[in-house]
Image (cartoon, rainbow, N blue to C red; front, top):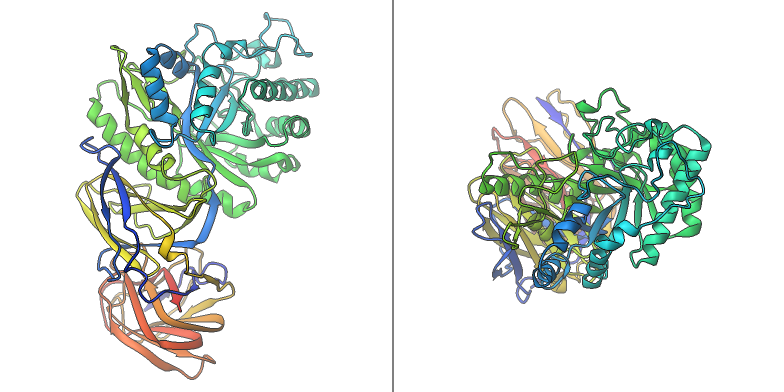
Length: 626
């Protein structure tokens, strides 16, 4: 028999001691729920509320723990590109006002709370010529930045940004340049090339970015976040502004920018990288560890963290970076939906909804992102206007030829977050069963808002309906989601606010080693036994709580390892790890087993398998209640 023990290192075992009111579920307010289905039959449609009960469920159970908190949320949204501004400005005043409310109003709309704005031109530029804020004739320079002006943006972009801020005062704004002015670059062009490797150029570019931040602030749009180059590994942009900026150059820009920006705009944070989870093959032989090299450089003192895009790799890259640099933040800042030339609208909606639900809505946020941002907030029915670059991109809304506006999949994927998860919220612990690569299960992410209310976003990866349960403290409800659906559940903190989580940092665990078993320890927070014959009587996991703890319930949770619960079990306790007493025995019927005992105390717990089964046995989480 081979025994594999995962996640039992002191820092990663998930244990908590919680006080639970005896009748916690009786008077708890119900959960409200909004659902979007891939066939558009429901689009953020509020369904009847779901009452909580106190009966455990045999369905896969999402256990939400409001007291185990992770990253703070800054917001969710898109970009008012020059193209977006053009199509929105072309609407009739009444339709434009309705569209802006639908996008930014937290009550009557989805409350978009984060915008990433191009500094100058991108591929989504309605003008015939690309631009920056300091363009001079070829061959000339402007180190004094005498020609600097944001007049281009005053026509359409800034009025829309001011209206967005009026509708949602909690809106955060990030700014990102696609290219420095051409006179700062090799080739004297906005398209491709690098910054000239000259200290005077790094200084001029840093001052250019500071002048932009100051100019936008004077125009009523303070800049909360600033990156120094969009997609710095994209060496060959397709007829649109872009700059090949290797790590060595980005750190020089950051080193020049940091002190200037801190003096001019102390609240503006600098983000590094701003590119894909992994290096795209089309970008050639690049620095695959780009964000790591940035954060190891002394210039990282000026960085709040790293920004990521979705066009290659997967969201787990964010957690890997967080583990390496836990004091630096992670922001997810671009992911456009896409449509094939011959794809019918219903296919585009379904494919975008489900892929973004897995990877952007849930994948990025479960992997430490403080923001989730798509790309264009609005485009026309041809996916434009654009000047080079992406010809298949989609927006949150589409302006149709008759002047009406259609909300599309990204409106709902972002809306299922932005309408219910407020800036300043914290992601909290929740059991999830799905994967960003698709495994057909239920996946989710949970948040605690500043007012204490909870938002749980759930996606059914499967094409068929799936039933599941949600447990918070001593309260549980069951629900069934249609195939491919995305849902947000909310409820006030209310009756679970009395649950006091006691940290058990210092707890550790070991597994039985009988019959020639060996053990392997890693950090994925699960405990799994396996053998050719599956579960066998006598296998056990033993937990040292670190100190004597009082409890009246032990929750044994197999987490996302569906079917891997113990078919038979015995719970024992000990004060010294030598003399054991049996607290309870029973038969497992599903992922979550709650063992209620007479109030007792112990330093050690042991869960022993008492039945044989072909399944593996997993313990992803062990929780104590008192």
